[in-house]
Length: 309
Image (cartoon, rainbow, N blue to C red; front, side, top):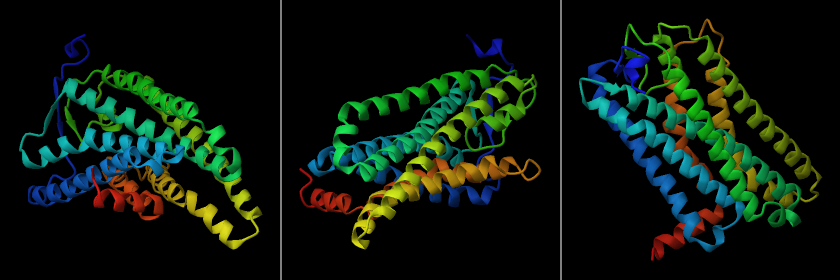
């Protein structure tokens, strides 16, 4: 159905990260470096976990999926943002905006679910090490990843059309550097109760389910580690989940900061800064977090650099 049936607005204008003309080139260079590092890091993780025979365990299979998600999430946002630093007219079409929001929702929801899946994987690995390869079988890995992507896709195709079914008949200026839900709904001149309710229920369900899975998994992991008598054994067990704990802390810390702010202190400018973090900074940091603290990845990288063929 044509967008004109829903709204008189056929394109939107993105304000970007900053409206200061003198900051456009410096910001372009900063975010270009961030995006290049994100591409290099995540493509590196995908390549290493695909070609190295020692990285064919469930943990690295899930890590490869997280890298794919991080790569997709940043690619949905960064190219358009970088182009807008260099042009005066920062416009995006109705359909382009809807597609970007749908892509963003797919990847961000998939990341939330994937972090929960990875927490469960670490729980089984530490609490039931002898049964790890039996419990977390190849079939279960594929099932969990498929459900993760399916859930992300279903969220995107429900929420994005709901947001774009609103009437936008006044301003078309989005106070953001990409098409996000909150600034879009702020522009609507129709009743936003239904989309706001759907977004709230969806976000709350995703975060609560994922966080409960992570917290229960790590509660049991900590109990299991404390039962290990040797300090060397405890250190080894902790090292297998330290990277994931760090990634989870950074991701959920950003999410909680964004969604648990008092309404009086909440602003779209604050949302921009948080969005920069979980759409560009976290996807760049994750490969570093998982590689710098992981000897298997470092050995695989060294081997790959010495003999890329």
